[in-house]
Length: 348
Image (cartoon, one colour):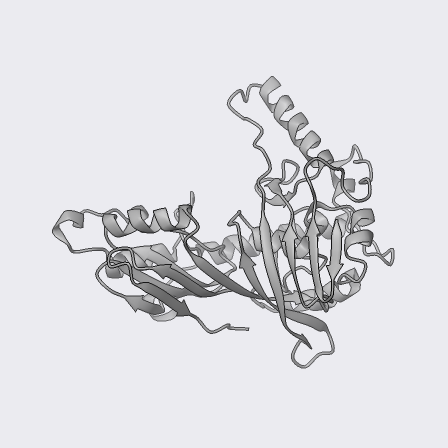
């Protein structure tokens, strides 16, 4: 449903009801499902999609494996005996991951691991409280003692944290503000990415799990879609510097904190984040956050066209970082209970 009230819009989908317009039937060919068309009928050939996606995989792997240094990548916003708050640059991993790549966590542990007797053997991974995607910049908090980490986890679990993001998205977003209330699920056709959950995608996910279990993957279980809400407010409608390409600067408030939530919700609104390598044009994820073109014609008729996204995509090829930034973080201090607020300037 897409409800307008003045200059505010609410995009939502009740779980008991079908999607606004029935989705197009899935093609038996996986590649056919990946075609991305704009509402003017332009189509991106599958060969182009495959090539672009392979190139992005290579670039992402190169970026993730690149060395990091405290001089270039470690910008400390706040430091005391219990916590350290950093402003992470886009393009480096927050945590090492399964490939043990260089990361911000490694730099933080090396520089600020606790020297208190009770935490003298504090392991690197125990400092993690939350994380940002590799391509997202902004504020990240780490714990320096087990007591602080435990309390910070409690704050995040109980949603006693206020986070604000800033994003630059393709095209001009028409409503001045709104709420995106769309449940998210793991995209079983394109793991490990996320998508908006619809009745057809849930049925497809159940079939994938059934097939995997039949072929020996007995422990794989279908997970229920997770409710996901994002509030957005337009800061300004503008153009990219030295171009006439329309973009919108948004303030984003993730009411829930799902994986890739802001990126999927922006794509599902019809305005993917500028230079998003996964959920933008040519990305490996499902187009439009998982919605069919028929649904998008209803909920986002003024969305950013493929033509516009192609023109903006040139910036990604020139090394432009994804324009999503964790700008503000507000939380109580884990030990003394004092309200703490930090802001990091937006780099784009």
